Amino acid sequence: MHALVTGAAGFIGSHLTEALAAAGARVRAIDAFTDSYDPAVKRANAAQAGVPVVAADLAVADLDGLLDGVDVVFHLAGQPGVRPSWSSGFSRYLDANVLATQRVLEAVREREGVRIVYASSSSVYGQAPRYPTSEDDLPAPHSPYGVTKLAGEHLCGLYAANHGVDTVALRYFSVYGPRQRPDMGLHRFCEAALDDKPLPLYGTGEQVRDVTYVGDVVAATMAAATAPLPPAAVLNVAGGGAVSVNVLLDLIADLVGRDLRIERLPEQPGDVAATGGTTDRARDLLGWRPRTDLAEGLAAQLAWHQAQRSC
Image (cartoon, rainbow, N blue to C red; front, side, top):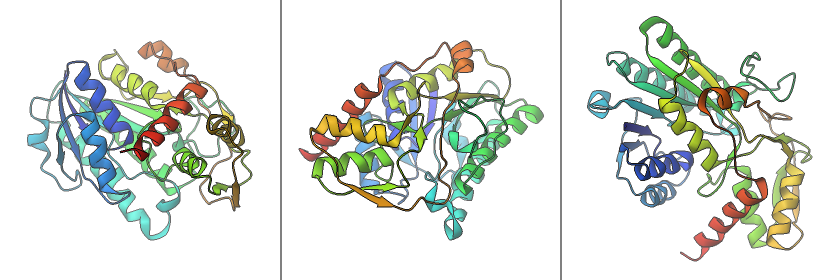
């Protein structure tokens, strides 16, 4: 396999790049190193992945040279996060999540035999009417971020239908683990717990999340590169069990060995009450299922946070 990984210095992208290289794939890695969070963190991710990362912004870069010889594109690049996607921040999401995806698809449509594995999000479901949610349920995003991720899915589908581009979209559910982005909930929870500082909690904590360990997400993503799939396939990649934020906090408290101090904050626009996805389609088409126990995964993430403090 000769793979191009976009967003290769990010949380999931760096793990994917590392796993591909370990599996013997030829990997070309690119990242825009934007300031959505500290670029130094991304460069540290890239160093841990062990593959040189080229700095390139997909919204403006010349993609032809980047695609030479590639047979699969893992398109993980994008502007993450629900809360910053409102108001004036939306323009960044349009460029990074919609325009960049369209440019990748446009470049690939001139090349035969290239598959695009597109990293979508459970945010496309919004406030779903039932849980667990299946890929056949109607998406209804609850945030501008979710709108842009769904737009990327639609672009994959129309390039598949009109130009025969081989695409698969993976809807990732609440990914956690080592190298998690600093703005994400579990990252902030772990840092606050280790520092014995007030832990910011938006809402009541009864929100339910289908958390998915990053190693399991990487396994599904790699499987999607080569599995025989129908055109424009869409698959949930979920942890296989949903838990409340309060339960997650209790588990972290057990791991650090002390009660947590909670700072109660108002619920934020765009946050949903629950996420939860069926994984039957991923099991049947990819031969994949989540394998990492929640307590085991949280312990691995917390150990990573502790290791960062000794660097």
